[in-house]
Length: 226
Image (cartoon, rainbow, N blue to C red; front, top):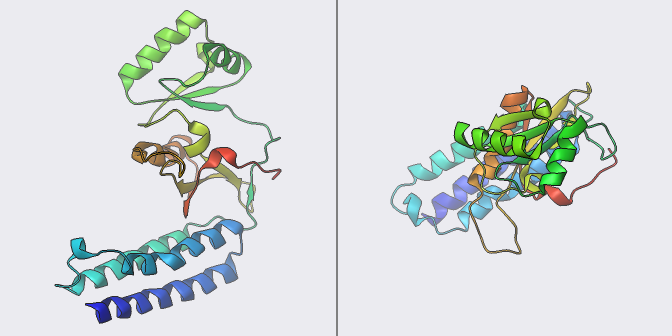
């Protein structure tokens, strides 16, 4: 089993190294580099884990399947990268709106102000939550003409942390970077599976390209001048 794991690790590492060089030759952007940096360590990480649940010791075929899954994932990420050069949206650039979730984590006064002359995008789990939010907004005299509801499950209200990282590709087209969010290293683990899936839902809602970046990330502390 040990030799099987080492053999498949070397095979997958070879594929990763080859695709990394190929991809970075054609697409030298920051996000491509970060994506493949994460993928470089994936097979070794898996090889060092307790893989009894995969029954590697009993069936080497599982490692073949694992290598194939990693290979397919690498190819998909390589082909989904944006046209270079890529840049992040700057803090000072015009915004199309503000993203919050229901139930809220911000004061009612701020909600009223945000919807006064801007678009307020509100994430809700279902139609029941949308009805509840609408009723509350009416009682606060929120401008509902500037409120847009998006149905997507969430675990927390910290949209600034797990929400979209926005980029422009080489043609100036807007897209969303889909990174991995699993909470905060300095707090006890909690569930964030739904938070982590929101960016995919947003890309579908806005009909925007979604670029995979297998990097663990907490977006609220990232600021850029573009």
